[in-house]
Amino acid sequence: MALTVPVGIVGRMPLRFELDPEATPELLDSVCALWADVSNAGGAVGFVPPVAKDDIRPELLKHLAAMTEGRTRLLIGRDEDGAVAATAFFTFNVHRLMRHWCWLYTVMVHPSHQGKGYGRALMAAAGDAARDMDGIRGIRLTCRGGTGADRFYEACGYKEVGRVPGAIKVADDDFRDDVTMWLPLN
Image (cartoon, rainbow, N blue to C red):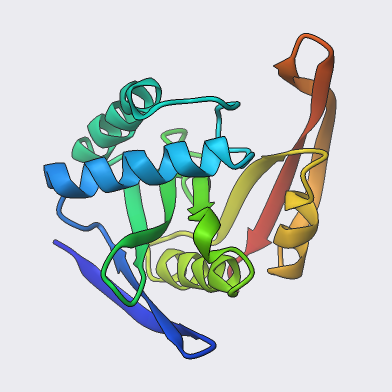
C-alpha cells in the first residue's frame, strides 16, 4: 500500500513524495533511467560512467526482491509533470540489536533538477517517512568521499560518524573514502 508523504515545495515547483509506490514496469523503468542519468552525470550511486540502463537493471532487481520480502522500502519524489525526479531506498536491519535504525541507500535526484532544493526536500521526506516507521530511531547512510555529499548530508542534519580511507575504488588510481553518516530521529 502506498503512503503519500507531505509535499515538499521547492521554489514554485512542487515535489510530491510517495512511500512504497506500486512497482509497475513503468515505475521500475523510470527509476532505472534516473539511476543511469545520475550515474552518468557523476553521481556516486554505485556505478561510474559510462553506464547504461541495462547495467543498472540487475541492481534494481535486487532492490525490488528486497522490497517484495519487506526488507526494503522505496521513497520516490515526482516532479510537477509526474516524472520520477528523486529516490531513496530504506533497508532494514535483521540483527535483533540493530532493528531500531535503518539504512538509506541510492539517494538520487535527477541531474536536471540539481540546484532546486530537491535533494534537501528528499532528505526531509526520508526523515519524515522513517519517523513514521515502527521502532525506527535513526538513519544511517554511507557516501563516497571527494564528492561533497558528506557536506550535503551534514547540511541536512546528518553527522559523520565514521570514515574508512580509500575503501571505494572508483578507478585503478582513484580510491575514495567511505564516509558513514548518522541522523538520530528524535
